[in-house]
Amino acid sequence: MVKLSDYLSYLNNEIAQARKGMDLEAIKRAKEYSEHEYLKYFKAPRFTMPSIKLELPIKISELDSETKYTFKMDRDVFLENFNKRVSKIEKEHNVKLKRLKREDLEKKEFKNVVKELEKKDDRFIGRLDDSLTQIKIKQPFRPITAPVRAVKRFRSMDANKSKKIQLKVDEAFKETLKEHYSPVSTKLKNVFIQPDTNSLKKSGDNKILVKLSVELVEENLQIVKLTDAQGKEYEEIIID
Image (cartoon, rainbow, N blue to C red):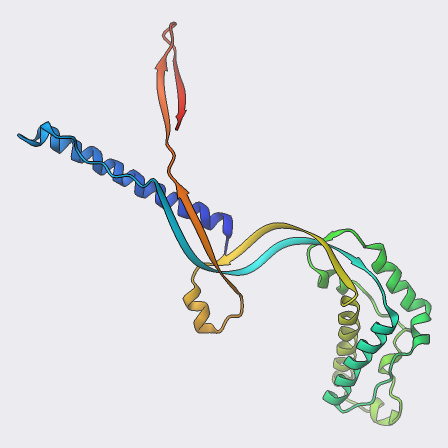
């Protein structure tokens, strides 16, 4: 995985090295012409690359960016989506969990969570998940893992399994909160790519495949050493 800017810089350097090699060959050829009995009357050929077009398949591995979000809570949508996730956890672990109700969202604990998220509006953050990880779901706002019935069965449940279920419920809580975020703007820092697309096809990688179209147009830069009227040397850069 490399930065896109480093990859383009590498391509530019390789083509510049190719141009340098061609120029050295042209000088060598010109000397041969000058020393040849008949070729000295001809101009030595020199080939240039006015422009080079490249079509490069690459895969975007990662975007280093910061996004500004706004958080808008819709309690009805939150209840519906969260309770759906709880139902899936019930089926997966064969337990009965209590659903959240409208009155649960009126509790101070929940309102504090919403207030904290709204306070972070219009700030650039690296990842939304990192921001949500900081949310602490404390007692008494955890009615979601209390069993509706079969209390003995729940209490006798293996401690590791009980903790696993609680973590899944907490994750469902955060995923449901995430649905109430809307991106406002994004600041892109770096794009990381993987040029070897063949290896990704074999591994079944699902990263984004794009075609990078690059055109490098030849321009010349020359540094000439000159001497002024006082006999001092100075450099002059000529660009054409």
